[in-house]
Image 1: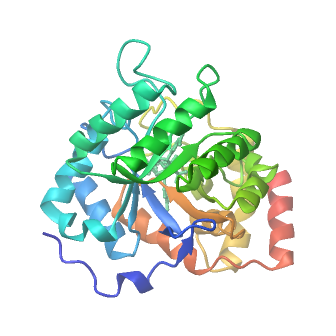
Image 2 (image 1 turned 180 degrees about the vertical axis):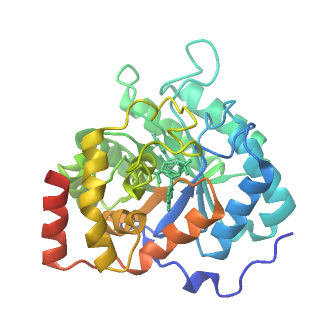
Length: 328
Ligand code: NDP
């Protein structure tokens, strides 16, 4: 079993998720990449224990994370058993269902059949009795919203999830989901949208919905999959996510975004932060953002990124300089 750092909860600040009792570290760790069946187990293990030692006690998964799909949950389960299971009550572990997982009409999207069967599969892969947060991963326009929300409610009532959550829902649908779940008295506490300096859609309604309805926001891909770390300023490093040919990023790096990172660099330096830290701190400047959900390929990245949460206050001049740098 891992022996954690005693003062871990003083290292990374945490924030309350909306008006709920759930508290999350301001920086959380996602297992989308680098935890699948193809990843180096020692590195995955070192990343999880490093995160926990830094007070990053929230790990985010989904049924389909891998590759192959499901294998990131298996990796987490194995590392929990070898290193972290003693600390299960300190950990906040989430999973999701909403994308293709098995053949046929009930292996995808938002039916009650799919969501509840998928949660059972996720629990088996992780070797857990419950997850702390269960998400509907994306809206399904063909299934009544009430059916998907009743499945989340059922997940909570059955004790297989502590809290219900949604991801990738637009603001109006998030408000409608919140209303249904409030009427059911289901603890709906969190929305997981994409958000970064290069992708600001949540500023147009979703953050207001979060404030009004009382749910928190955990921002995924806050570094735009690594672009905002500045690592692509001088080409594509072979050991980077894009260099490894990831289909979500390879050939899609926008030169204008890379130029923006060049302009952001002096602002980061003046604050004593790396570019990655500047981008994460900026995403946390609004306290309706409960946490930024990072990915990582090494323990060192997690340490660098977690430290960003200790400096999230910006002067008006800094914010204006960032807007100028982003506009170009
Ligand atoms: P990020 O934007 O944080 O990108 C993470 C990648 O950036 C790392 O894997 C690493 O890639 C690089 N990186 C991170 N820190 C540094 C650093 N300090 N210096 C240099 N490079 C760095 O997040 P992700 O896109 O990985 O998403 C994070 C999590 O969000 C996922 O794991 C998942 O849990 C969740 N997510 C949810 C989605 C949803 O639909 N709900 C969709 C997508 C993600 P490398 O070193 O390999 O270049």
